[in-house]
Length: 303
Image (cartoon, rainbow, N blue to C red; front, side):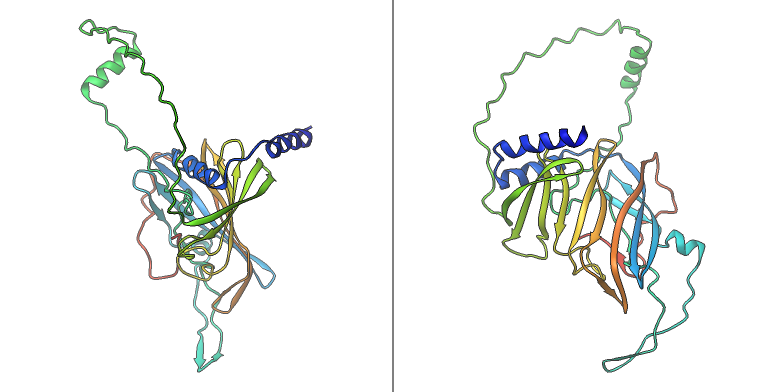
């Protein structure tokens, strides 16, 4: 039954005239800008690599301050907390030859300093409104409303006069474009049909990194993207990555980032690598042991 319904929805989406690719991209950016996030979030950044046929996993406790956009994290993974690392080797080199072999990197892709709602150039992540402290008058009004006690000194507030709706004249798109965007078609994803956009940067390809973007045909929510390179520094910087998103608590978050090529890090070859956001939850206050202090080591961070 589900497959029949999904096929019918896809057929309707294909038969309907699609907006222009630039309008689809603009609607996706608009969708991103309207997201609303909690003030405090805790989550785990989970780094998985496959090296030498073995799956290696690290969990980094993380927190996000939605009021400031700051990320806080524990620079030591849960695995290293349980089994502290002891240095056993060293790398020596003579001209172009490596002599000896050091231990494998402690942090496979670097210490995770990642926000769960990074926009990848689609749009700037909106901040949460600051918490409001009620005034004495507001507290009195709240108590009166709670106990259905009318204020004897209050005067009725006249209803505002209705204003005529503004008529849309035209949709305007900036001509100073960063990408040449084409609509490759409509693909069926797990969430439903999505416009498949292909993006070619017109300048600064290392800044404008998007290459493919899948946008929900009904809501214009970004569902998946491919970027030419990822992160600020480290072994995963110069390989393409695939990114998927998930709806959690009514807002859009990063689900998983997956490398599309092998990664070479200090002699270790990661045939597969991924970074995912897991165990995301709203909290009243971030733990004090999470910090934004940057250690003197490789940091896994988005541009």
